[in-house]
Length: 341
Image (cartoon, rainbow, N blue to C red):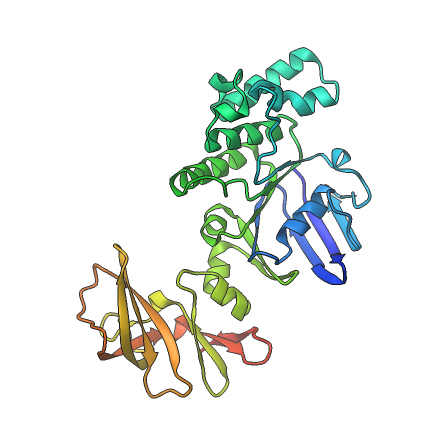
């Protein structure tokens, strides 16, 4: 296990700051997820840590050693790409053993490590096959086995599940988390999928425009977003935002419920005109606008279907939010202000 630090790490491409002075630490044995939209700099950051891109400025420190100027092979890291990058002409066994053979590992040791990695990922029966004979999930396991067999101090995973279908992604996500816990290897994982990030990460670093907006546990990121970007990027549907005299009020759709459903007296009441409803099995999404507000504020309520309440499009109802569920954001900076509403 090892820590990974980036110190004021910066990368320019033709004058564009793809990564803009990022300072970040992945702790020993941690599963740290880099989350953000396309073009936010997360893959560029990952590639600099791997040694595949040279920083414009700043340093990378792995296990207490500055590795900024070292080639990838001297950083003791392993990377799994979105494409898996398997050699199509080699068998699964040869793909897994390739990094060991490249450094002249003893034949018996290679056999032992390949067998160990294949057992770990349940791919022993595929060792004589070529990658084209495998499913997407099986190829993903081969790529992970090839990374594991080197026993690196850090795993770097760049959207390795994105080529899988939705059902397989869910099961692969569980397996990947279990493998990481078993190995205890520090892991940095890139994704644009917030459900993936929330399900996998011990902590999440949310990136936007080359900078880190917030680092925290999934619960911290969701419940107390650092700014408006995080508030609206995390959550499906995203956090509702409405303007008031001070700045912005923010509250999650599941916290915005019909009067009488939410108990307690410390609530804020909003007259809510419903425009449409969506039924999603376990939940109903209720879309509408807050009446008597200028400019018109569009908001969403997320109501579990087991809560029985008569709501119809075109109607106006009193909805409430508990004060403790309200966040305040500064109008100019977009940063969350201390305290609740």
